[in-house]
Image (cartoon, rainbow, N blue to C red; front, side, top):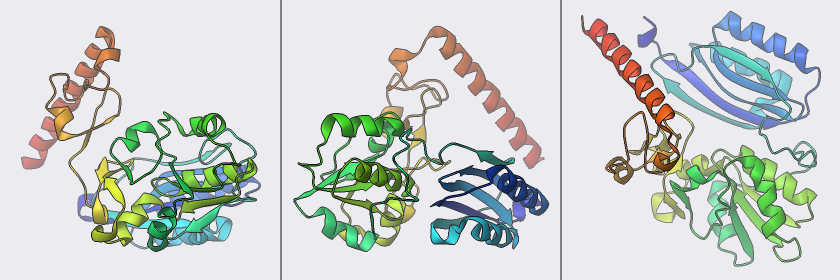
Length: 305
């Protein structure tokens, strides 16, 4: 029955000062359980972040509560759908930050850069005085990036501040524009940059996903595809799914060329992690993959019976 029911999915975040977090957590969790909402929400003094799903009008009801408590409709809120339940459980977690930078001076509830709409982005980055920086991790930038953008080659977002400290100077880079997948990381990065003396700081509102959705292909300055943190792995123009897979050994996005490599073994390893793969990890991943395939085959057998 559930497989024939369309689930509505909401991906959201908003930087906003929140108080009494344990009480707020309990109230939101209770309402989610009542409505059979699934997914994950993160609550922190700086705001709310997460992806949730519900059936029928239940998502409308929970978004109304979140809007009352955290003004989520004033932040980034994107809707999609799923034919099957997209998350097993509902989690409402308390965190120190909704996106981890470990820089207390970066507080978007108090200081934030200039939001730039997708339709205005090309004109901004065409300015030769603008330094364009990608705030995403290296496995994301490997899939695609804007023309002329700097790739800091960071492994985690917390390393972004180290890149800025070692490579940038407010007296030289007077105009800085940043981007990320959905807008949350570059928004926080803009607060960090302003706190460290950079004069003009801009960030792409809604992130790369909003840009690919709204800017026509013939006008796009985007090269490649965009890594996403769900089953699609990567999307292209108009958010169409592209043929990437994840390596289960290192979680790196794999192109068709990667999967043709002799070092690629589905569910085990790829060219990006083969040198780091110990015999123990290899056996463990291979066993896990075999178990997964066996369960998948059994499920398909039951469904076809």
